Amino acid sequence: MDTIYIETTIVGHLGGRIRGEPIIAARQHSTREWWKIHSSRYKCFVSLLVIDECSAGNAAAAEERLRIISDLDVLGGSSEADQLANSLLKSKAIPESEPRDAMHISLAATNGVKYLMTWNFKHIANAQLRSKIEGTCRADGFEPPIICTPDELMGTDDGT
Image 1 (cartoon, one colour):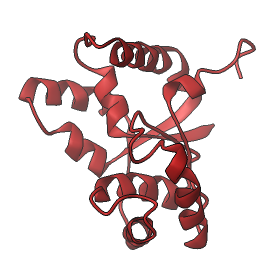
Image 2: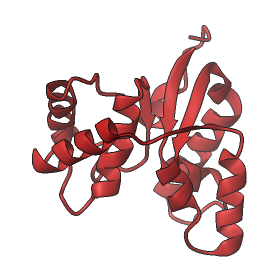
Image 3: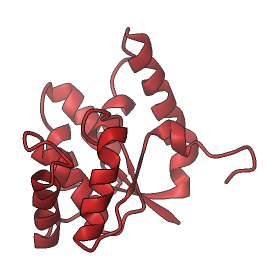
Image 4: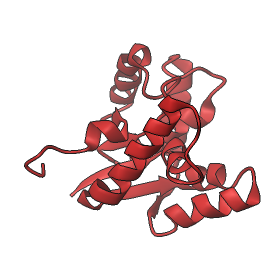
């Protein structure tokens, strides 16, 4: 079974009411469809960082987000993850102002997770940064996760 790291933006799209902005609403719908129909095909993980980010903000919304991920396995941090996150920042694969985004990638990479699912197009699922992210991970001795959105992991008609 393939493994997948569920980044915080995915959890945010799973909970709460459907937003009025059409693009956000469409992402919420596809995330919820993926979660309901396709997530059982994967071993899903979060991290303590995801839990921390899900705990922030409105108490009722935080409770809902934490409930959504309560049954998922939690990846632990390590000195290797810290080192790779620093490398991602120093190489400018991830902007220095976004250490949490670097840590999401490094936790997935250092734990050998195949996919990192996100809606963060600014710093994670960014075509202009992707080669830098992958190169930095490989230079530090880790295979980078395949960064994707729920839409990209919906599967095909034959169930694969």
